[in-house]
Picture: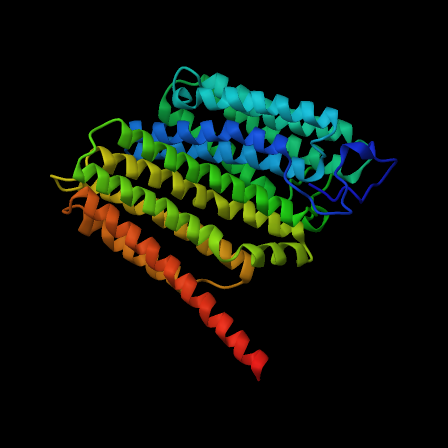
Amino acid sequence: MANPTTATGPGPAPSLLRDRSGAQRVTFLELFFDLVYVFAVTQLSHLLLAHLDWAGAAETLVLLTAVWWAWNFTAWFTNWFDPDQLAVRLAIIGIMLLGLVMSAALPQAFGDRALVFVLAYLAMQVGRHLFATVALRGDQLSREYARAMVWFGLSAVFWIAGALVHGVAVRGGLWAVAVLVEYLAAGIGFPVPGLGRSSTTAWNISGEHFVERCRLFVIIALGESVLVTGQTFGSGRFDAGRTAAFVTAFATAVTMWWIYFALAGRAVDSVVETTSDTGRMGVRITYVHLPIVAGVIVTAVGDEVVISHPGGHPAGFTTALVLAAGPALFLAGHLLLKRVMFGYYNRARHIGLLVLALLVPVGTVLPPLVVDIATTVVLAAVAWADVAAVRRITAADEVSVEL
């Protein structure tokens, strides 16, 4: 992860890298690549729904971290490499195929397809970094990719060991160590004896392009939520309870979209593009988006549960926890995103998180639909607080201009 302009030798063939003289746009190949992750997110939500307990949640979390990491490293890759060049295009298509295999194996990743999942994941991560290391030989960016590849080699020991052992708990433990190795390594700059440590000031990226890629993944997650909502509603009767749950699920997706997209888009672009260390900003954005995506996935699972069984019985602890946890993860991630981008913690999100926490014990004795409506109201209140804040800022700016 380095700035392609800081070469230390003869450098790579310049045609492989993006032209940095103008705006960096997301290409059609990148959008096509993202289709694999629509499938991956759907697989993860179905896995959690089928194993709606603590063990299932832990398994889904481990797999989500791997899926997010695989997608994210490709987003960094295409931030530097030009997808319109043949060699880069073929590399992305190869990564896409491996991602499809990985996604297909997700439901049985803790079962009979553990080795398939692991080998596809490692082939993506190591293969992408090997391509970049060789293609950019002589450039500082090649050294950065080589450092990262060494750490993926270390995590591969735990991934493969986990795939070969028997016992879900042992496998999950080994894979959790593999995930921690990879996430911590990125956070500390992939230090390697003889190769040194990466500095985020050398990881300069096109902030506009990277932020747009993250936004598109959030759209993928929201799109999967809408898909699950429509499929679940369409598979049963259109009675009053199911219809109310369907409308509530749609309203939840809209409020999540509103909170994430509607107000701060241009401000985020400006902050990322003008920061002196786009690499550090990119790493932080990478980490804080994980709970945002997780929140959308868990919310989709909760919506499916409520549409299938909207009322007539208390929600119980598990259902109440799932219904509150999805929006809570989303708000917590967005709270951290605001902190990363603008340097402050948002009060409305703090209040929203507190109310969602209180809804868990209260919701155990309420019908699932009532709990679901309550969580949607909390999200809507946060969205309205954002609108009110923007109006106050706009009014203050207009007054200052008049004065």
